[in-house]
Structures are given as structure tokens and as C-alpha cells.
Image (cartoon, rainbow, N blue to C red; front, side, top):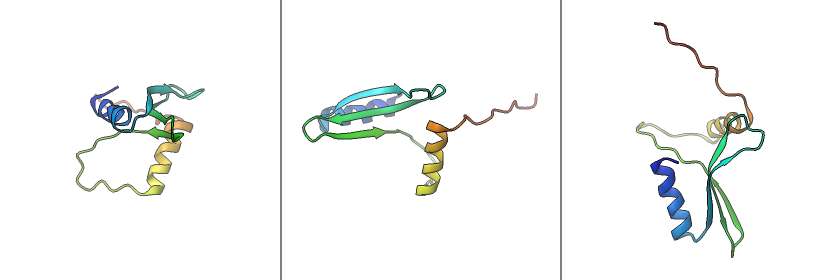
Length: 86
């Protein structure tokens, strides 16, 4: 768990009074995991949180772009990695 994930986990645990689990493995997910799963016992709310930080000034994801990224992350094959020329 990186620093940003720890901050978000602390927020859900302390401020939102949720039970939290971090780095939850996805069943049959080809080495995939969920950053944070939180559950509020009294209100029975469930949360799946993916944490990300960017320094890009023009970062404005659309719903379609986010959906495609999450579909690939949790259900699709990993991107093919290419070797850089030496």
C-alpha cells in the first residue's frame, strides 16, 4: 500500500467509521487487486476505492475512459509490454 492509499484508508476508517481492507486480491484476476474495500456496518454501505495521483494539469477523465480502464484492469488482459531498443 502506498502513501496515498494509506491516507484514503485512514479517512474511511477514522472519519467515515468504516471497516476497511486494503490490497484485496481479485479471485481469478491474473495478479490483480483492489486498492481499498470499505464497509459501514450501521448504514450497510459498501465502497470499492481505487486511488490515483497525477501531476497532469489537463487530467479530465470521461466516464467512458474510466470504464474502459477499469474493465481492462479487472477483467481484461494486461497490456503487452515492449522492450525498449538498446
